[in-house]
Length: 103
Image: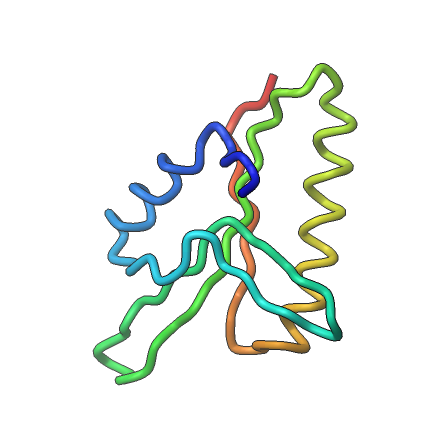
């Protein structure tokens, strides 16, 4: 199993405080023989609509020596996961979780 990002559990706690139910840790799916592994899957029941809202979250810590490399990796993963997830599970929204201020 790949190592979790530095802020993985902080993101989980923040999601729970906002009423999200963590359904996957990690969130994985297969498309066309390719295995995708995102950090977190979560759901929230919206009582007024009687319908659930689903999200997938990719957590990035930005702790490498090169912030440009970190950004490149984060945006690349987000774009790839976004395309694949839209084809696999279009009702699930993808988010990229990062610190408010990065080094």
